[in-house]
Length: 598
Image 1: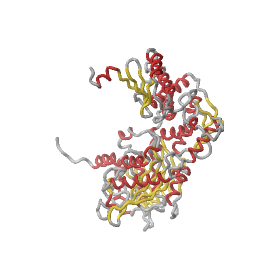
Image 2: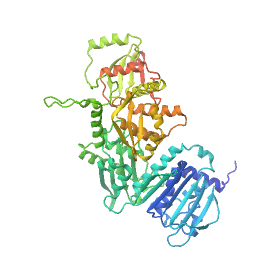
Image 3: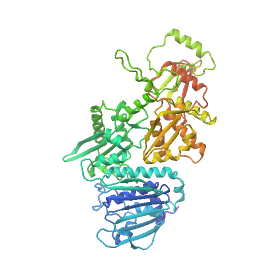
Image 4: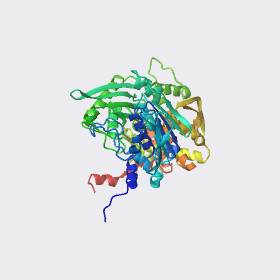
C-alpha cells in the first residue's frame, strides 16, 4: 500500500481523540489556559453536560491580536520559552488543546491583551478558521465551545449521559478550585449556579479555607494537618502539605481523594495505594480514606509529559515520594489515634436514642455497645464468639442439617478471615462469601416487597438530616419519586441537604445516613439508565450492597446457619448483585484429588 500524508483536518481530529476524551477534558484544558494567564477569576457555563456548550471566561492577561490565529495552530505555545521539556513551569505546554478542540466543535474566542485597548475575536468551525474581527470584551479571554464532537459523531456516541458528564465537569472544577485558592470560581450548569467561590486572601489559612469551602466543615474541622519534606539533593526538597481524614471518616469510592503535584490534579493508583497503606488496618474493607494533599517538587525531578491529558506523572525517585506520603500520614495518624469524628459519634448516639433502650449498667459494668452494630436478622442476637465445636454438638448438627436434603448448603463449621463461612453438606465442603450472599438476599427481599406493593415503612422518631454535595444532592432530589417507590420518604431540607422521614422497615437499625451518602456518590459516578424499572433495580442494588453485612464482621454460629437457610430459599442466590459467585463447593472427590488420593 502507498504511504501518504494524512490531510490536516484528519490529523487534528486524531489529536483531538487523544487530548479531548469528553467535555470535562476540554474544560480542563480551558481552565488550565486561564490559570497560566494568571487569572484570579474564572467563570464557567455548561449546557447539557458540556455537550451543547462549554464557556470559560477569565480576567487573565489575554492574547495579542497577532497571536490569536497562531494560538489555534497545533504545537504553537508561549509556555516553553527555553524549549526545555525538563523544566515545565506551566500547566499547559504542548500547544495541542485549542486546535484539537476546534477540530471537533464550533469554537469562539474573544480576548483582550492587558497592554492593548482593543479586543479581538475569531470563530472556528470543525477546524476551519474565519477572519479575526473586533470584540467588545473588556478584560481577559473567553472561549466558548459549542456542539462538541459534532465533527466526529462516533466519539459523541461514546459519551455517557448528560448527568454523568455534568458530574465529571463539576468534580474537575472542584479539584481546580482546591489547588488554586487565590482564584475565584463560578460554575453555572443549565442555568443553575452550582459553585460560587471567592478568591482567598493571602494568609496562613489559605488552603484550609478553600478546603472548608469545597469539602465541607465536617472534614476541615476534623482533618489531620500534614506538613513534611524530604531532601532530594542539596538545597532541593520534595514538600508535602495538606489534610487527611481520620479513619472513621471514609467513603465508598475515590471521589473524595484529591492529590496535587506542582499544581496539577493527578490520578495515580500507586500513590493512592501508598496513602491507603498508611492507614493500615484502621479502615473498613472496601472503604477509602478522604484526603486533600499537595506535593511540590523541583521541575527537573518530575516528568509530566507522559499522558495526553497530563493526569499522570513520573518521578525520578518514586520511592522517595511514597516514603514521604506514608511516613508523614502514619506519623500524624499515630499521634491522633484517640480521635474519632464527631459525625460518627453523633450517629451512634442518634441510633441509640431512636431505636434502643439503654439500660444503666450495675456495679460499673461496661455498657455492651454491640446493639449499635448492623444486624443481619432482627431476631438474632449478634455476639461474636470464638469457640471450638464440640464433637457431640457437631454430630447432632450433621443429623439435623446434612441428612436433610432441603439444606443443600449444609451446617456451619466456622468462619474464615471474618468474611467466608465454611459449611459441610453431604457432598463435601461449601465456602460462602457472607457479604455477597447477604447482598443478594437483601436485594431479592426488596424486589419482592416492591413487586407485591408490600413495602413496609418505618417512621423515624427523629428525621435524619443529611448534607450532600451538589451533584449527589441533585441526583437524590431528582429521584425522590423512585426512592418513595421503594420505601423512602425524603424531602429537600434547606440548602445542600435532604431530610429522611421514613425508611423501608427491612433496614432495621442500618446507618441510613451513610446509605444515602453512598447512594448519591455511586449514582453521580455511574449515572442512571433511562428505563424506569432499570433505574429501580440499579438503586435497589446499590442500597442492598451498602445495607448488607460487611466483610470483616464476626458472625456467631446461629447467624451463619440462618444466613445459609435464607440463601437456600432466595432466588438467584448463587450470584451477588454484581454477578460474583456467593459460594463455591468442593466435593469429597475434589478434595481427594488435591491430596492425590484418587
